[in-house]
Structure formats: C-alpha cells, structure tokens
Length: 428
Image 1 (cartoon, rainbow, N blue to C red):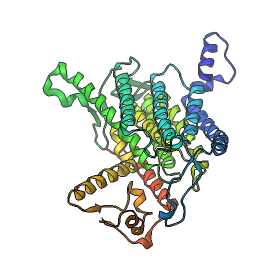
Image 2: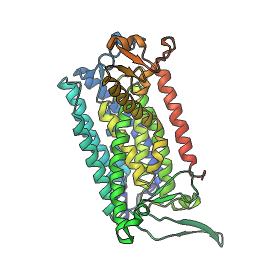
Image 3: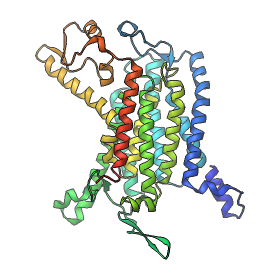
Image 4: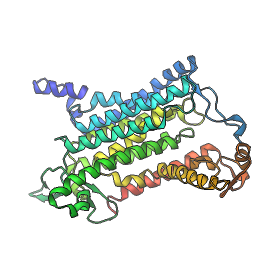
C-alpha cells in the first residue's frame, strides 16, 4: 500500500522526498525482510500468550518412547499463523499490487494456510489425531496448482525473454533481448544450452498441436510439484526449528534466482531467460525468509510454539510456486533435497512394510520415518510398539542423536544444496 500510495502521489506531481527508494526492488526487498522479522517476533510473543491462555496446544511426542526425555507437553500449535501474518503484511505494504506474480504468491499463502489451519483446528479442538482427511488436503493442493498453472498460461503479464545479451557501446551498456513471448521453456542445470521447452517433447503431434500439449503438460507438472513440495515440507516439520530453518535457507536461494531472472542485465550475464515482473517474487521471498527467521526465535529448541500444518504446508507451497513462476522448477529436486529425502523415506518404508505384511512379516527399512526420526529412535521404542518388527538398518542404540544435532545437520545439508543450486548458474 505504501508503494501504491507513492506511485499515486507521483502521478499527481506530489513526490515525497526520499520516496524514490521504494522504486528500487533491493530497497523494498530489504524493507520487507526487516518488517517481517519484527512482525514475526513481536506478534509471535502475543500470539503464544493467547494460545497458552486458551490452552491451545498439542503433545508432539510420547513421553514413554522418548529416549532423551524430550517429550513436549502443552506447547502451543498453529504457529503458522505468525509466519503467514509476517509474510503478508510487508508484501501488502511495499509490493506492487498490480503484479500477477505477487498475487499468485499471496493466493498460495492464503489457500494453503486455510487448508493447514483446518487440519490443525480439527486436531486441536476436535481431538482427532488424523486431522483433515488426506484427500481434502490433496484436493486443495491440486486446486492451487491448477490456479497457478492456468494463470501462468493465460495471464498477459506472464512472458519471458529467452535470450538476453549485453554489450558496451560508447561506454554505455546496451541490452539486447528477444521479444516477450509466452513459453513452456524452463531452466535445466549443468547444461550449456540450458533451456528446455516442454512443447518440444510433443513434436510428434505436429507444429500446431505441440504447444497446447506442452502447456497441458506444464499445468499437470505444476499440480505435481505444488503437492509434492508442500507435503515434503510438512513431513520435515518434526523437530524444533527444522522445517523453518531448512525453508529459510531454500527461500534465500530462490530469492537469489528470482533476482537474477528479474534483472535484465544479470539475466544476460548468466545467459538465463529474463522474466519481466518477477522482481516482486524477490520482495515476497525476502518477507518469507524474514518471517521464518523471526519464527525461529520461538521455534528453536526448546520450542515455545509449533508451526503446525498451518505453517508447514504453506511454506512448501510457497517454495514450489515461486520456483515455477521463475521457470526454475527443475532445480527443486536438488534445492529441496531434504524434503525429497523425507518424502522418499516415507514412501519406501510403506511399500516395504506392505509387501512384507502380505507374507505375515512386520519388516521395516528404517526404525521410523520420516527419516529424521530414524536417528533418534531406539529399537526398544520400535519393539515396544510392535514386538514382531524387524529393521534392516537397526543401527546402534548407543549412537542415537539429540534432535538439535539432527536439526543442525539438516540445515548444513540444505546450505550445501542451496549453494550447489546457485552454482548451476555458472556450472554448465
């Protein structure tokens, strides 16, 4: 609103001294970062007090099965409300409210926030551990993916310049770019000519049909990515500060990629496609990172509040949609490697368990999934729940890890993966 007010005053010749700073994306991004941290810390304190007075809490772990005695009782949940508020307020203040990318990010935050809040509400107030039925969650994620895919397909604001170059003429930098076009092209890592056009996969259908087929594939891929990354983030939310820290690191990397893609000069320097208007994603991702950093003030060990599905589903969806908007979705498997590892561990464990159960066997690959739980779970815990279980990687119960160490190690992995993802700008 500040950004829009300044523009409105400027059009009427009423420039405010210093207001020109708000026309620079770097200033607005840093402003959003700082404001989101302040809101997250300030509002978080009051929100936690409200939840405690109303006894809105959950028990995260069974005290009898925790080898370190770290079971948490009476810790408030629904902390995702803090994150969502700290994201939306600065974006509405300094974001360009006529930008389609900003509204896609806001819609993602609100829609997944509502789905996650409904799940937390059912678990907390109706005392139903299952929460919102899985199909309802998936349906909401698919609906969001469809909204994003179709908006990117039909909005006139969504275009790219595939080729951008710069040269110096008479000591002046001249930018040369191809025409703005709608395209199903995306960036693939490590290859010199690293733009992939989904439509080319359907060349066998003929020139007229391959582009509609490419867009259909893109929309379906968007559905899958939004659902997968959102659920991966949800699974990663199992220890104090884990999901918030990993997501903040990923958010920084996406913000850097968005800045490079939104700036015609840097896009030309790195030989990347230029995405006009995507600078608002930079502003949004700075607010996103600031909200998570502020939330860590209360969510780091020992947690004073859990984000719940209100937060974990939302932050995963934000990461997915922001990458899709800047045509970097194929970088997500590497960038979100921790989320991918968590999701695959659950899928593999369930498949392995079901195949064994048909033969009357209760066999597991890991002691517990998501995989982070394997490193803090003892065989005593597993056998207490199911005395007939066998575990392929049982490990040594004397080498169990505290959750703080597991959390910090996932952060280190995320930092390495984020650095590698950014390096793909030059390694090809």
